[in-house]
Amino acid sequence: GGGTAIGGMGAWTQIRLAAPAVSGTRSGIWYAKRSGGVDITAPTITGALDDWAVIAFLVRDADPTTFLDVAAGITSQSATTQTPVCPSVTTTTADALIVRIATRDSTSNPRPPQPIGALLIAQTCDTNVSTNTNCSVSAYATVQRSAGATGTFTYYCTANDGGLQATL
Image (cartoon, rainbow, N blue to C red; front, side):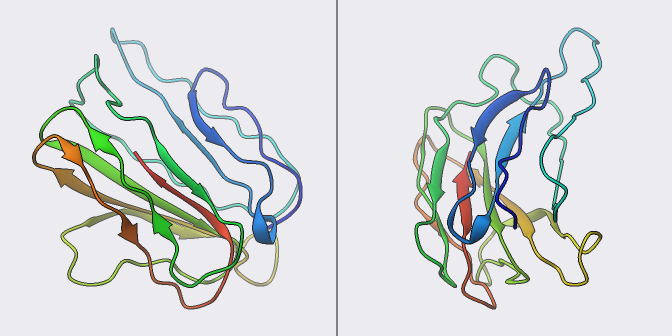
């Protein structure tokens, strides 16, 4: 929630930094690669004092030359929904790791339908600033066995809300 956009992550590469969207959701996506034995700089996120939900995950042995071989597919909602959809992207390589991210401005708990063949990477909600969970983020991974379009990925939520969906 909240109306102030989040900001910078230092040396991390920004994929998406959204201004407050429907329901006041603020979402950002960054990545960092470790190369040549140099440690990754710790992230620093700026923004208003408000509810936060942050996840991080490590991908070992990723190809450093084509770490991201697709243009990120991003959907910022213009209306609330219980079925946010991550867009399709087109990979250029086979056996690509596909990450689907959904951010929400409530306790709507985004989950994919079962069975889906996807692995939950991380999911968290914020309850530290306010008495209720006011934002959440979920990330699921699949593998695209052959190069080409991934298709869309629909999350199902327990409540109508706003947010951002991304496919990387």
